[in-house]
Image (cartoon, rainbow, N blue to C red):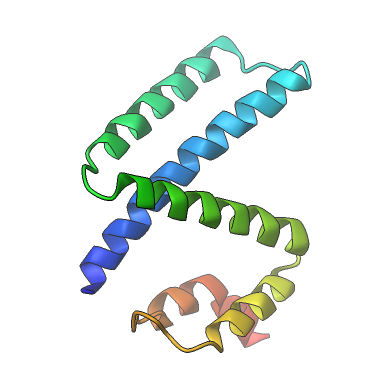
Length: 122
């Protein structure tokens, strides 16, 4: 699979994850009796609308994107919950997963340096 197709798939999954996250945030806030102020609510609604439009442009495999997005979203929440603000622990999880063989042959080196470069210098 070409890297451009992989990155496109990741982008659509992230769009779906962002929409789910925004809706979850709104639901949790509502259950806690919190609401966005009017101007923020307007931007929130615009974001949901734009994300839905972007997701709508995916005609094939939309269910697969949704399934992948749901799993990735749950994985992200788990990772954030387990690491908190401990960047070193996050790097340890990253290196653990990276030790498995690549399924797609993606070049992760540039993004890795950008994301974890400061930790690797310590």
